[in-house]
Amino acid sequence: MKSKWLVVLILIICTFSAVACGLSEDKKEQEQAPEKSTEEDLIVIGFSQLGAESDWRSENTKSMQSTFTEEKGYKLLFEDGQQSQTNQITAIRRFIQQDVDYIVLAPVTEDGWDTVLSEAKEAEIPVIIVDRMVNVADDSLYTCFVGSDFELEARKVTEWLNDYCKSKDIAADELHIVNIQGTMGASAQIGRTNGLRKAASNYGWDIIAEESGEFTQTKGREVTNKLLRQYADINVVYCENDNSAFGAIQAIKQSGKRVGSNIKDGEVMVISFDGVNHEALLDVVSNQISCVAECNPLHGPRVEAIIKTLEQGGMPDKKSYVDEKVYSAQDEVSAIMVNDKKYDITILSEDNVIDYYIENQMKTQTEN
Ligand code: GZL
Image (cartoon, rainbow, N blue to C red; front, side, top):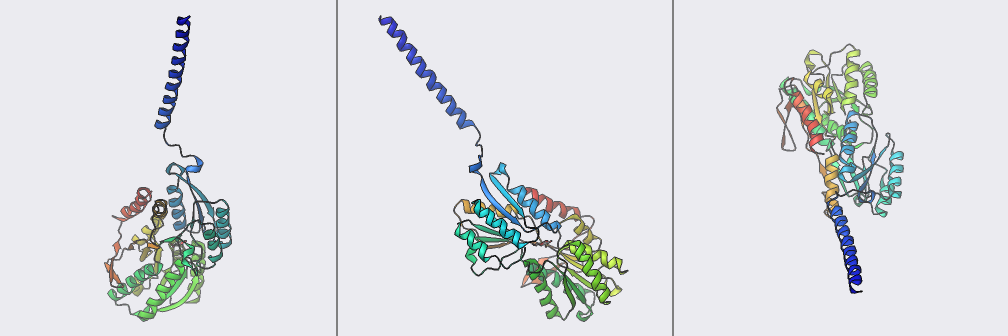
């Protein structure tokens, strides 16, 4: 009898130990298994992008999309506003309904955001403003801003223009400028226009006309065409982004005039902003664009750094601005001063232009 019970006891012990081993194996497997980011582990970001109007905007969108991937623990909800504030407001309301973790807004224009940002604040969803700024009565409606100082960009190129003219004995009253503006009411347009106006008032330049080229090549060409037909003495076309500059260059050539820096010899000078793609930098080398202020679009890594700070309970700077270069192929001006600060001019040539283009592309890769 005893031996039978002994056998039963041994069987019971074996069974329990087998089960215990199994459990520990499962536990070990779980511990070794890589963390699978399940849906609820992802940080959900609602990104309201203003549109797809320019090469700059495409690079900006690419930077955000390549930064906020599921592999890195994010779920990016991307909405293209197609240049419409109404669409962007609708997108933000959708993000609120979806209870995203963060809202990132690249606002098409500065005004009109108070109500919808109050709704986001009410829902306790942090809002990060990227690229252009919002003009709100209460700046607690957004957590922070990261982007460019557009008026500084304008001060840089206008200081370059002033120093270049001095080096060529071109008198201030010999300059007859048209401003091909960006999207009216956008921070980039406001800052770049203000910077030109202040320099013109300061140095005695003649701004013949200002009209929006909407940051696009088509509209830039159309507006420049019209102004060239209206005003025979235009010798500087100040374009508030590269795509409108590409259009202006086409219009100047179609008018039978020559594009270039040699104003004294009758060339029409083109000045621009962005310097984002190879075409723009090659236009600088070939003297189609005399000077371009870089406007860096690679905000993905910058926004990610802000979100990481917030995730760790930190508070990012309320406003952070990107350091940006000035490019020219004219070596008469090697540096400029703005507000007592010196900015070197990056002199581009066929030998080095690829380095700067690659550098920008590398920034895209390395910063992500
Ligand atoms: C600048 C950005 C502007 C670019 C344009 O940060 O808002 O909008 O200069 C773009 O190319 O369309």
